[in-house]
Image (cartoon, rainbow, N blue to C red; front, top):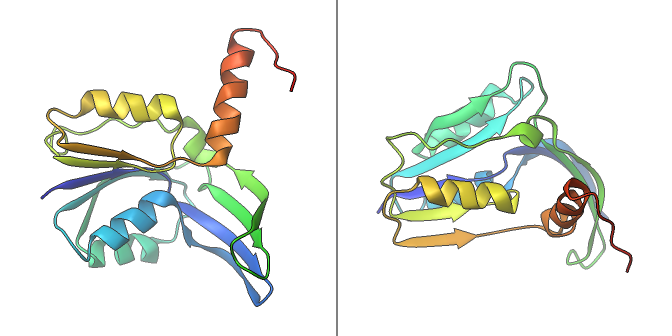
Length: 169
């Protein structure tokens, strides 16, 4: 079973009442592909990181038999960064900072090598990009989508701005 994973790779800063980790490996594509690597092969990863993304994190992904040939590395922009703070119950969180960086201009092009993937998991991506990716896959059996409040709220505002409209709630 081939699994294609497209989404964010990030350097996250996470705060909890128990400690803080700065610029640690994060992102939906990272978690999906790493988790899936324990159950199936090949896992094919498509994403973008910046010039500041540690090489040892790419090596970590490779060590899980994840095909990273679809990983783009920007030479001019930093990696996506999210800073979140979790409450004591660890179920409630607040987004402190979201810096899209290289991820802001990510335009996934699925290579011929990956287009025959039967199973596709679309991680945290703008909904328009999720649609674009699906159109590039030849015969998917199953497509799974993940999203975040950032895109649910932000995509609506971007759409309205492009139409020169406003919404008042």
